[in-house]
Length: 98
Image (cartoon, rainbow, N blue to C red; front, side, top):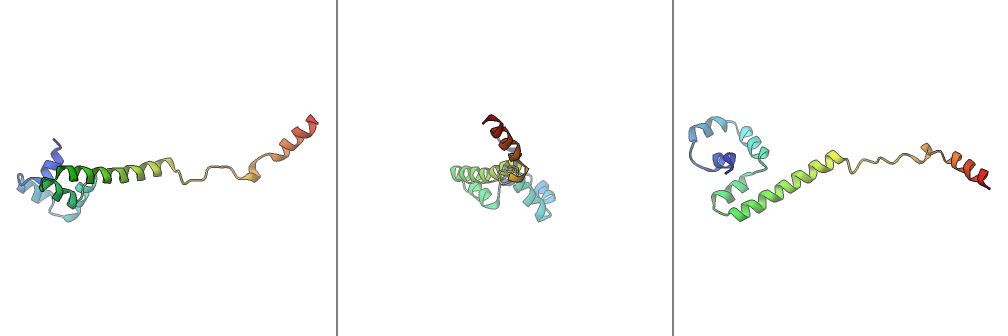
């Protein structure tokens, strides 16, 4: 069982939750770190486990896709410019073959 999810969704540990979540940005960072948001917590607390899992999987897919794209630099052009190719040498080789 995911202890972070249990901590976020149950009413136990109220004093610890008050200390940790005294500042709204801390709660937001905890949710972000676990690929969660308030809507997902509501789904989980409402017993809609399948909807919760679908929503979380969708969020994980978006985050993972963005990470992979950023790390692989798919949009980065890595082809050398044409003027850097030694085309003159290629012409000389074909002329010597004739």
